[in-house]
Amino acid sequence: AQTVTQSQPEMSVQEAETVTLSCTYDTSENNYYLFWYKQPPSRQMILVIRQEAYKQQNATENRFSVNFQKAAKSFSLKISDSQLGDTAMYFCAPNYGGSQGNLIFGKGTKLSVKP
Amino acid sequence: ETGVTQSPTHLIKTRGQQVTLRCSSQSGHNTVSWYQQALGQGPQFIFQYYREEENGRGNFPPRFSGLQFPNYSSELNVNALELDDSALYLCASSLSSGGFGETQYFGPGTRLLVL
Image 1 (cartoon, each protein chain N blue to C red):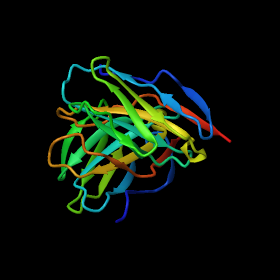
Image 2: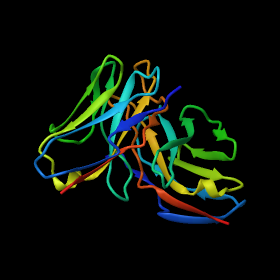
Image 3: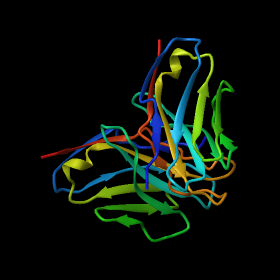
């Protein structure tokens, strides 16, 4: 089974500080995509960042960046200058394609940003 | 541009009943995926529709079925409801050329409670 592990069930960070959320996955595929989604308490899932596995350059989106280590099958998310609005569940979700093309979600990390 | 919408927002059913959940895709999107999110868990893939055809299915029994209409709106039908079907059901749409890896945009979900 293709598994996704988010080893930090809960994390907290002070406003304006930096936090890193970890994610490891298991696949024998060579070409795939990786996503981080956030789900605020209002529950609508929102895309944070997307990474193409064949690209060595790490994706960045404003305060959000990833550290993608393909050989280690690791895909961590760094949030810089944390804001109160970053409080949410964060899900790591690879997409390996094949006949399904679906996202495989981890169990999530609950991030609390404290003032 | 309108986002993904779902109806109803909440639903209470009795074990053994049938339920239909509805999703309206983001404008221009031709692919819809459905996920089940149990409390405290990450979403699990149910199935995906691409241009009105089922394009992949997760590990869910046949009593979970779906439809996609020519306007790319979609339905999820669940027959013979069981207590374990209680969950948040998420719909996500994307613009696909038949491949994979496109960003999926999620709706707010339908919370189903089976008594």
